[in-house]
Length: 260
Image (cartoon, rainbow, N blue to C red; front, side):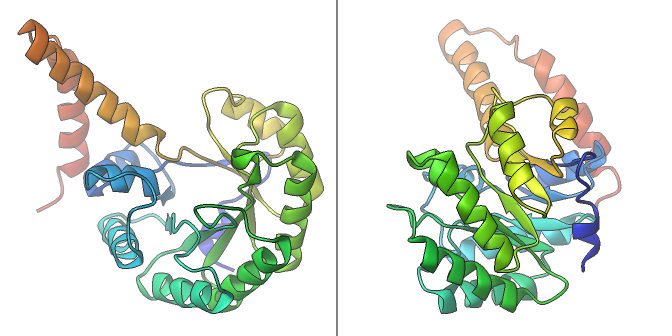
């Protein structure tokens, strides 16, 4: 299996932040990130659109550009793989693999509803078959974000494991009890999304988590800083934002120094 999968060690989680463009990707790598994942919501924001409005070609092209710009593995957030049927999922995975990515995620939420567990499992199996041995599929059970219960989440993750998914993910599992139940229900590396209320990384390690991602949080933290700076300028006419700008300029200068 791939070098990317080798970074997933239960109890010593891979910290995998989610950049939203090439600049943020290079900065995160310069800070020590050993792998990255794209963010559908963060990328959509760069286009001035809401999450869920990006096309397959746009998402894969964006992820490929980030992968080409850094020297660490990059996994793509491809939502539900832009298809409801297993054949369409397999086609998306094949395109992502050809684009030079290390892996991608497959969600079991269509955009309007969670897929029937049978279809959801068939979609994961199709993704795994298309992935081959050097491309890591992360199978996501989304139902906790949409009113589902933990028991159904665990059943789905177990089915996705049986379908061959190398990494499992239940965004919305944020309490220690939930995370412990998820990790204990499967025999594959588990990713946890670092929501504000999630335990710190040291505690996640103790719970056996193998990977921690940030979703769109870093992108929206940056947009929050932009909004605060813009509000200060436009409403107060002052320039206090230069304190943060200096730190950002230093980080960018360090990350981009060896780039043409």
